[in-house]
Length: 102
Length: 212
Image 1 (cartoon, chains in turn brown, orange):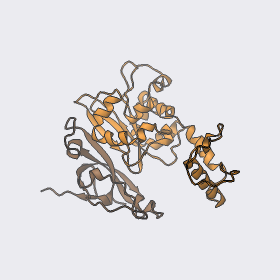
Image 2: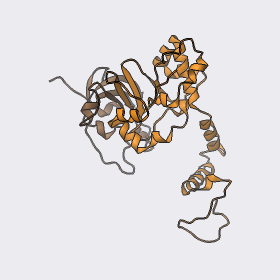
Image 3: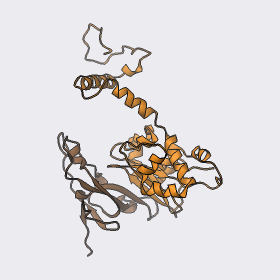
Image 4: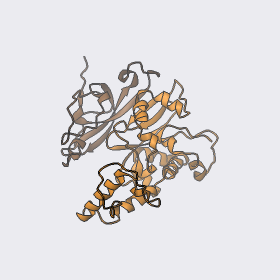
């Protein structure tokens, strides 16, 4: 399956915060990166969607998984460390949207 | 069940000592786990002994397996490149079967220091390094490693200079991470066996730096 994004692409993590309860989706996107802008570090290929697998489903359609890189200083107010420090998180494609140049 | 033979009701906490030679029965969680296992065996979902065999297998996986992989990568530049490009196939060259784990190798260099955490639970390359240390699963490590990695690293005794980027990997989905540490100076000419001996579990998580 084709990947929507390529390494180096600027992306925004979807800011959704759906309520989680029994029988509802099991989401692997950490809250602290939702709504944050990052850059695709690497495209890791298609994987079954854990939001379906966790509730007994087949996890299909598959979702392309990306490693997305964020500057630490952007994620945490008052981050103590140089501006070059980064954090990478695995994000499935349906949690990413493109950032178009202004 | 440990309560078989008791003829009194008690749905309450009590201080009956567990059999001293059988710690597996010492907690309510252990009792619940055993009941679940028996039900799964009865339903034919688990084969008898399957859980015990799996535990034995996990206990047999030690960080030394990862250390052997790292040592080979230090000693053999072609293997190093294969480990970065196709980690699962490279590990299998050393007889390491990752059991379907999607291993991803991140390399410490002169400009980047990598450190691994799983903020959502405790994702860890168990098929390469075995059971993770308790601190790896603690709330404190899982929260602080992303928010203030340099302070956490300092507590592990790792001072990362300001000119080196600290790159935290939050292992939240399908990948499992191995940090490939930098080969320390003073190890020129060492055998793979001698090299492997200085590669600690923590060095492969990124919370330690090997030294000669």
